[in-house]
Image (tube, rainbow, N blue to C red; front, side):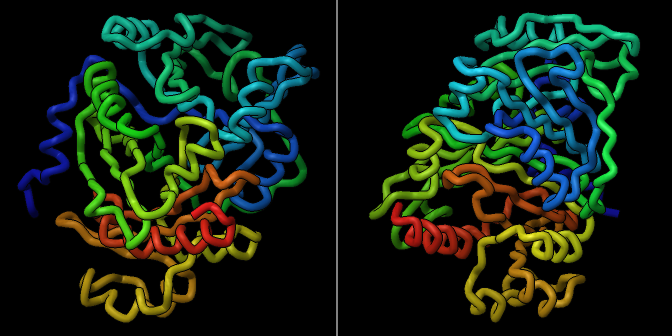
Length: 377
């Protein structure tokens, strides 16, 4: 048994523990039609009905559907009238991630520790209760209009949060094997990456796992830079991207133009069987970026032995990369909104703790082909 600590583990040890995080609690998306969005995530991605808040629960302002698969909870929220903050968010950004909620043991302490280190408060600690107990939530601002909400639920036994009721439906498509949020990627503006790297290091105690510059992530036309921040136990990983100079407009620039600012670019969700997960997603109508057939001609020379059959991977368009810890398999959907902004990554880790550096060139060329079709390259 290899007991030598990896470079990733050594870097994680530099993360401070003043903000213990248990994992991702939920992701809240502001959407124009929560009812239809919930149907989409159930039908296409195999999420299951969990909880609901709306007029029937006494909520006169918003409607929210909560869907779950594995440890992943998505909250899909729409306003019920005009002139609201949520409506303005949707008008500016389109449908997208507003809240990256983090599960903590003490939401008051999380708020105090982060705000005293310079975080701008979004929500002061607030206790909410119903017949199933109480929760405490607090929140801080991060890049763009995105926020982190700290959720303390140790004294709560309800279905989701106070104010929500159980949502039961006859229509429940089969789950597709999604397990948990592996990482969340944020796109920020020109020369802003290091500002937000510093924020996560100083305000939240994260350590920098990896850094990619424009030599690592570039093609003949476009480039970007990225740094990956992680908390001490490695359960929360936030790559931060910024544009880099290239001959043409990069995917990050395109995102910033259409999202009209910084925001969450993609949600990476983990599976234990990427072949069956991706095959099922394709059968349900989800479209993925594709790489040229030549990518697979030298795959085994580059990554060595893998358990999966090359033909099965090639047929589905799955990418493979290896690091010192093992290998990973990954694939990226096309944007799932009208604007070329948010998308999903499906990832299966077989030991690897990295993020697919060896696939960047092939992936970015695939994105550029899509940009060209959109007329935004």
